[in-house]
Image 1 (spheres, rainbow, N blue to C red):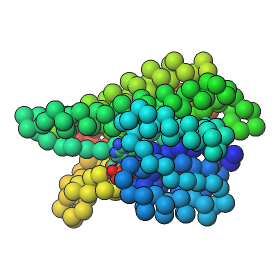
Image 2: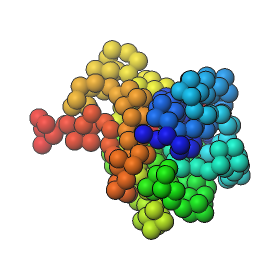
Image 3: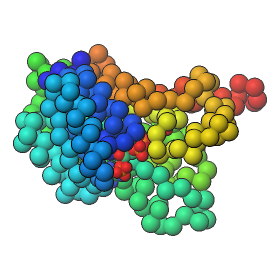
Length: 264
Ligand code: NAP
């Protein structure tokens, strides 16, 4: 589905990013596996991707660092010739009640989750605009896929930094989609619900925690990283070429406000 395309996945040595990088390789793309710490894990992801007969390499970069992101995309253009897909996935949580939250905790989450996506989108878009559409590769000049969250629209007490970053990602994505669509660049977001990864281990790692979480998920199961990876591949493919500026929630119905199924 993505044969001949060049994809960069940020935060690809863990969780959703890892599954997405592997799924991109399975779909035929050459892949840059970005990581910030954990080179060994990134190398293992590269091995998994290379087993599909495509090219991959690991690249260390902090997505909140302007120069490091510019260098990451510049290296990709040098080694792979160009970039077709940017998956701005890297993200983190620093949870705290508002009255306890430090400015550093607020700033770190905004820097990585929101500014990081801005920097990755900007550097990819420069190359997309320079190169334009190559018909044999894809109908579009490039795809930017922002990893958002159901917290793009669901407020989340005790996580104001995270929820604000994802709300910001929603508007970042829509504004970039509007600005870049005339260049035949598609910008969209994926909004995962509760997915079993290290970022939210406390929410699913005990039977009690999982039972409580399932009350928020009408479809009755916690998501797997592959649920998101498959959605990213579909979003990047020409099958969804007319999808521009949309957030695809992949959440087992979490955004259906399940509390209203019996209340309200
Ligand atoms: P995860 O397993 O913790 O993965 C997050 C990845 O981001 C890690 O590889 C992490 O690297 C990387 N990262 C953190 N700071 C970075 C930086 N400054 N530069 C580059 N990479 C950095 O969590 P995940 O669940 O897969 O999260 C992936 C994305 O999905 C995030 O944007 C998250 O907000 C979103 N999401 C997740 C869920 C869920 O339920 N899991 C739900 C909604 C949205 P290190 O481990 O080396 O720090």
